[in-house]
Image (cartoon, rainbow, N blue to C red; front, top):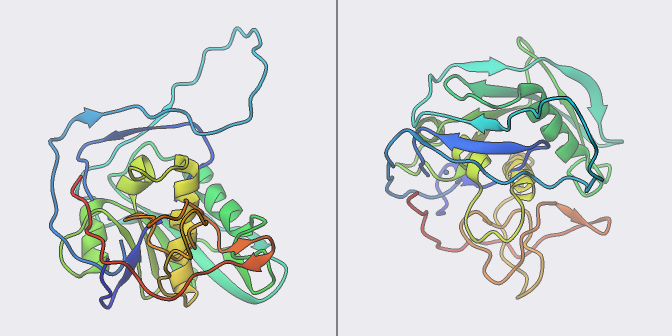
Length: 266
């Protein structure tokens, strides 16, 4: 991505078994512009189950619940469902950041409660932004005034909000909007080398990291974990995928900078 007025990138994950379907498969990032590509509609695929603890098989007479299918058009309604508040404060100290979660109309198959829980759990994880006493988070509902709004949007709406010309592949942060591209949420990226859950955690942490004042960073060296503020959606540059701002209780980062990676056409 290139640095424009928008901070765009990558970043996500979810907590349940998720299969993916898409009406159009398109591009999403913060800080770059590239051409777009539309794949014919009516393509629906099923992704493998996300990682979950191994359990011993057991007999049951209950039917198996069908896997979720996330579906979306290239362009959503540009209207949003703001999810209800979750009053508990995440974190033990530092500046309180109130946030809303909003999902664009036209996106289907996303369990809204699970999505919100995933975001809150990511912020409060042992290596997450709220883990070291610098930041706290609280999800607020409709009508509240948040410090930022985390939005799950369709690829074309991503371009409308983030600006900078067609992209449709990456996610971005612009102003108080933390924008997650549903195409990346549903499909991740090729050659990431980690699970879709890890990628989704990365999406949330990376784009939120921009809202917390962090710029892009470079891979520290071959074989090392990538900093969360590296544009991992577009390339790892010898690093391994890593979704978190902290590692072993300390802030994990690389040198400021970004690579001139092209945005793929999907």
